[in-house]
Length: 430
Image 1 (cartoon, one colour):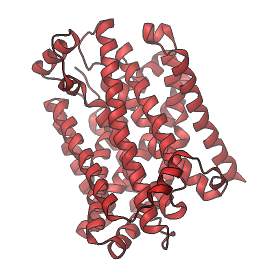
Image 2 (cartoon, one colour):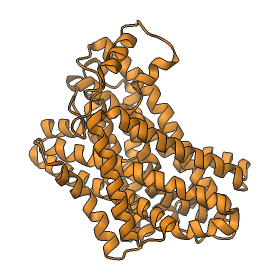
Image 3 (cartoon, one colour):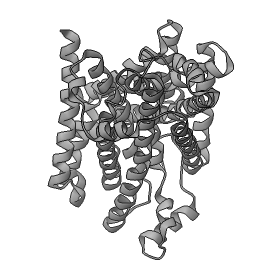
Image 4 (cartoon, helix red, strand yellow):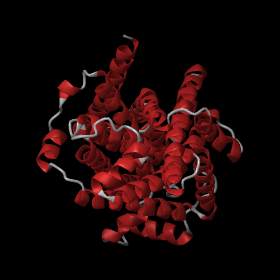
């Protein structure tokens, strides 16, 4: 099969086992694990360093008040990742390819430019996060941390030559490490669980008209619902199983839906844990903490060296793994929109170089992280609108087109994102 990265395949043994499950010859809880992987890979996009930056700022400045934004964004993310997976399974094409084939050239060009900017903003966040963590751990310059992160990213991407299962397993291990770090943090930080429950399910709307609260809220949405992850998921699913019939596609969609709920549910809990930890540690007396480096150094006297160490380990895992995923998505976006083969080093350089430029120019890394998430949120309506357009059309999806309820939910979610972005732009201009 021709995957996003280029050469990954499933082994014959794995394919045969999947065929047995789809044919009803093999059952049991372990059967679903054969189909796991794509949602795990895309879920890392929802726990990247951009999330660390926006979630730390949200918790430190506004306490638990923006937890409902994290929940809302995660539910929207589940819906759109599920739709993206369905698109790849039903059509055998990824979202970028369908845009190139179905839209006028000028529209395709505009979508490509916006999507490339989003991919660059993504890699900016990923590489900066990994570089910050390595710089704090090894006491090296930020630019050196960037170079190490890039080298590790390329090394992990090279594993794809041996099939994509090893990469999926490696990303899964890093996701588990991030989750375990924040489970441990929850036992260290002094958390007001009653306030957590209240602010998770009851929107604190009065906080949003404040300029910075709205910016952080939009940043949370941009860091949670990721444009590149929407593109990537369809690419990971488009040839996951060789020549499936209608019955096999239906079962693949069911297994994919289960995986999306579990993988993104874990990602959502990690995001909430980030906000909760920042709120418990910083909001009472250090609400001005909005910098990852400052957060790390402040955690030691507040919660101890253990909490600071767990924070740093989780940031390194997030930076490295999300750099891999961001680069994969950048490759898919460029390949899908232009429609011809581009050398791997060119596709990767396009998304990596801007991150090095930002660091070399001496910009504040954490502010660059937060602003990259706002850029992502502004770019987000492009893949969302395209995905809704394609998945509701029977001439594209056949019998797997959206039903009315799914269609209404997807349109409403897209409208929420667009309105949030418009309010942010108007506020910025005024």
